[in-house]
Image (cartoon, helix red, strand yellow):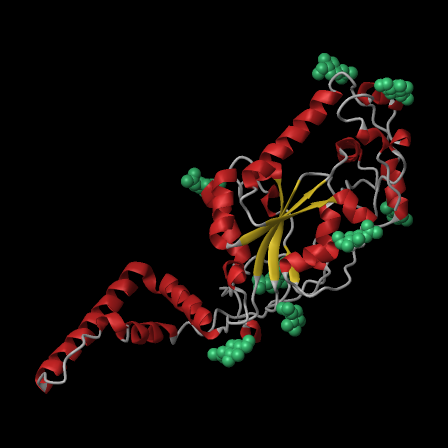
Length: 365
Ligand SMILES: *[C@@H]1O[C@H](CO)[C@@H](O)[C@H](O)[C@H]1NC(C)=O
Ligand SMILES: *[C@@H]1O[C@H](CO)[C@@H](O)[C@H](O)[C@H]1NC(C)=O
Ligand SMILES: *[C@@H]1O[C@H](CO)[C@@H](O)[C@H](O)[C@H]1NC(C)=O
Ligand SMILES: *[C@@H]1O[C@H](CO)[C@@H](O)[C@H](O)[C@H]1NC(C)=O
Ligand SMILES: *[C@@H]1O[C@H](CO)[C@@H](O)[C@H](O)[C@H]1NC(C)=O
Ligand SMILES: *[C@@H]1O[C@H](CO)[C@@H](O)[C@H](O)[C@H]1NC(C)=O
Ligand SMILES: *[C@@H]1O[C@H](CO)[C@@H](O)[C@H](O)[C@H]1NC(C)=O
Ligand SMILES: *[C@@H]1O[C@H](CO)[C@@H](O)[C@H](O)[C@H]1NC(C)=O
């Protein structure tokens, strides 16, 4: 699905967790706040008492912490603090610090890349907007790992705690998918459709993104009429399974594309304008609610016309520019008039309305 070479992640647990607890106590014992400033005149015995008290206090707090947190979460806190300390952040712009992360995966070790900064992202889109194609393009980059439509699973999006747990795993680089790269991943994310719990939980999700420094790539389609045709053709194939009995949402050859594009839907012109308006309003509202997130907005039509738009996305993710490739082949390439059964009716229904531009805006590849 991810369309990239999935590299095996090195096995083995965490690594480096063991010595961490000692480090934490040591660090805590040395905190300036705990060192009582004593004047030079104080007798040595008093100093020793203060010193011993400090030590006992430190050990006591340390033990309490371990009991309360459990050694598992404690060692995780320790590991994160170690990484934050060891990795030299001075080259990172002040405005960028919030978006730069050093995840400590539980399932493997980032070893020599533990100080490779990682950006968190999410491709936020809607069905039939070219997001599948877009994601394979991103995954062809050696440092980008986009883990697919993780929230197509109802269970994962059933409530906000379930969503948060899933996101934590993805952003900790612990999500295993065909798109998982290696320990040197520099941008990790997923593809998320608006109707997959995103609109339903928009406030909590925007809050999570802002708190954890996750950036969003809004990918939408301008021509909602074309999107509708693609959606209807996809639904049609879901039932008919035209390619040797399997349903395909995306194809890799022009031959397969031509088979899927043969179907010309008949649109209900009575409800057409209302449907288009519904989709339009739904997206508009969603973007309004999510606009506080650090984001870039991309339109499918612009990507098709001008591939250099992809470089804007790579710059946004702060990964090196490189050529991106995808094996996906576009399904509907003909003018709309040849793809809608009742074109004349549709034309008359939309001519002179706010959606008129959808009729004429055709593009060539
Ligand atoms: C990831 O999944 C693949 C197969 O789905 C498996 O072979 C591999 O061991 C898994 N890697 C980790 C680190 O769990
Ligand atoms: C951090 O990196 C900068 C250059 O990017 C360098 O000047 C500085 O000495 C480094 N600091 C440490 C503690 O390594
Ligand atoms: C990209 O990945 C390669 C190979 O894994 C690694 O050597 C390189 O440092 C990474 N680049 C960035 C910017 O993270
Ligand atoms: C959230 O959903 C998960 C998975 O469906 C479920 O196990 C869990 O009990 C739910 N939690 C709450 C607070 O509803
Ligand atoms: C269907 O399968 C046959 C062989 O089993 C293959 O030659 C043909 O290309 C396939 N057609 C499609 C549309 O995938
Ligand atoms: C078209 O939509 C209208 C309004 O939703 C509905 O009443 C009508 O039955 C639909 N026509 C067809 C052929 O589905
Ligand atoms: C393509 O997009 C780039 C970056 O967005 C822009 O600088 C360039 O002018 C565009 N080229 C054309 C032919 O529109
Ligand atoms: C579209 O509507 C305009 C008037 O609003 C009319 O002049 C034109 O002929 C219409 N186009 C078609 C193809 O019917």
